[in-house]
Length: 350
Image (cartoon, rainbow, N blue to C red; front, top):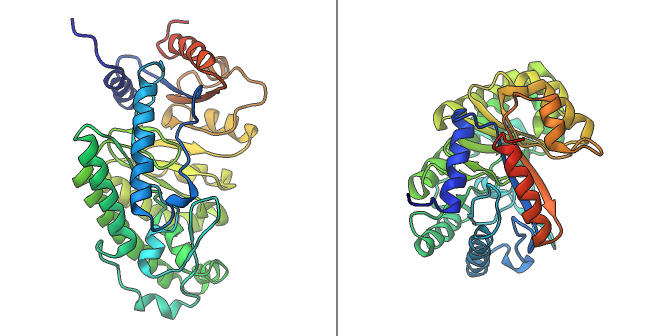
């Protein structure tokens, strides 16, 4: 019998988790132990230094491959094109703020509803998007067809619209000029859909999520943070139709939400084929999220309940929940020890 290589074995466990096959309800990743993963690129890799971004991504991918040879978790090595949240707003014409030691962000472009009609949906050939494909193509050339790409930092259509439109005016417009908000969000969704269709046609349907870095066999992952600023009725009017359209088109969604959006959890459950959910809040909210969503999504939350042994806590509080558990180790030895314990938990051998 041929022994399956570690990456293929990890991918199979992910596929089992997504398909609820072979009793799989748990996967895990352990970060640290040598270099933090996923690595943070050097500041000089931003914003226009395409060569630096490629070399940085390739170096980090090779490091992940080496780490895969000894780590016993379910992480998948990947290549990252490195972006901030600005890419689609920048494509529409927004200026970009360059942070010294962080990813770039967009500056608002419009302040009035009358300006929305003047905005054209950009071509994928526009420089902010074309460079991402240039970087991706070179990484795929080096790594071959088996290289898994991390998708760029995808914001939801309304989140992109809120970057383009000055936010103070944007939220007033939801009441005073809702048709303009719908029009802009639709244009953002059109660009987002065209970009991701091209991305998946080049690099395959399987990918690593934008945040946190988990493996997706197919679908789309995005950030939905502006939803925390509105009530449920507005969420269902302005946000939900776009999320459902994207989920239908791509075959499921994974959502990251770091907003104070506890009041929108029922709205999230109205998203068709919501597959993965990352809630980034404090420990109490994390605990509530495990219990509230339980078996309905794959849980990938930030912020563990204080003092909890998370494997035991999950088994006691959300035993039916499918989970990616992420932990950190200070040394390689600690990482190996944690992996051995978590493997027994994930494989149901406790």
